[in-house]
Image (cartoon, rainbow, N blue to C red; front, side, top):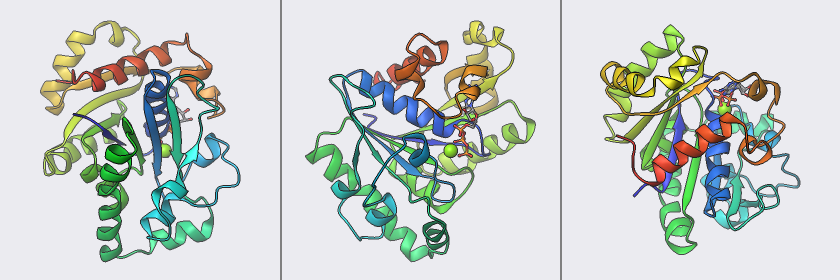
Length: 259
Ligand SMILES: Nc1ncnc2c1ncn2[C@@H]1O[C@H](COP(=O)(O)OP(=O)(O)OP(=O)(O)O)[C@@H](O)[C@H]1O
Ligand SMILES: [Mg+2]
């Protein structure tokens, strides 16, 4: 069963953060207990998007063994009212913290992986979270590899950009296969909007080209770009097509229909 979802990509700017946040919010809106994690320690962004205030402990502190996970969970229920539960666990955006985590050695990263794996017990088993969603750094950062190892399912975001396509293919072949992870590809910022109506055809094409299932096709929406991270789309724009596409992806993951 999929419980931990990592959202990753080869290149930057493919929509990982938008997707992580909106997928998590979509689950919460559907009544689930969810936490979104910012594992992009080099360029934290959820802190700003969620306008978190007075954060006492960060995900950095949990991974550093300086606090328990509960101290680093931030209650964000006010953002997604309803039956669900919505939490965030944030990366510390201070320059000092970014420099600190960038200088960690292999041994520290191995211990950090252990701390991530322990969330299965503390959050999923004991506190009955339904989903943990990991937003990651692009490429082969240690923290991203740890997120992939700890996840049940990897959402791989890609755009049509040639360098992105080639790099994504290499990563699929070498990284996700290595860890035998279930993966679903999301083609994001698609300019050819007829692609969304040619889903079956696109799905077959993607499967033969990337050898992975297609989770979704997301058009490039000016409204998403223009929002500049100022709101959570699935909550604040419930009728927007972006919201509907994200909800479909969440459903597919939940029902194990990505194949
Ligand atoms: N489908 C879309 N249509 C239009 N703009 C989008 C879409 N998806 C994401 N964006 C925009 O693209 C930019 C990058 O998105 P986002 O920050 O989610 O990517 P990212 O992969 O997390 O980037 P990074 O690798 O830098 O962390 C943001 O301004 C976001 O609003
Ligand atoms: Mg990001």
